[in-house]
Length: 114
Length: 110
Image (cartoon, rainbow over all chains, first blue to last red; front, side):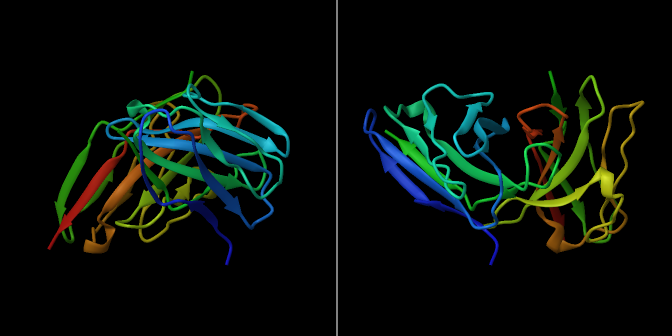
């Protein structure tokens, strides 16, 4: 089944404790992206990747890191999480970054930072 | 800068009533417009895009460049249409970002 998977689905952590949220897609998509969803703000892009080893900042990159060593994986890293990063995170992928293809979303990761 | 505005946070209608979810956008070029839907406990998924000019689950959306709008419509709402709806815009820029509106929750009452 073609899909985007994220792990973990739920995470409660404390301020400053490094964490990684994994994202994987099995559709051989070139483009991958991370969004955060906050009430009243919709989804905002954190980072994106046009292909392996090609990543760039989205609208709200502060406090996050990403890497794209393999085509299928695009982990989101919070080196020192803070309470304002409490949010619902979505990973998405699409066929190519060069055209407006449909983006496929993961199920979401609900992160709480205390 | 690209921006998407969904003025209604909540839209409540009765089953069988017409539905119109509003979406206005701001973009200097020719954007690609989408509607994404998120049903309860499900992931966000594409409902329709303007370039396809298709009707999905009875929903249609017409791009009005003069009014910079992309409203989502359905003549007769069903209870299973209850969900969160997001309008999204993609400009032909390098990063292929989808700019989302803040979303409208549609409640269809029996």
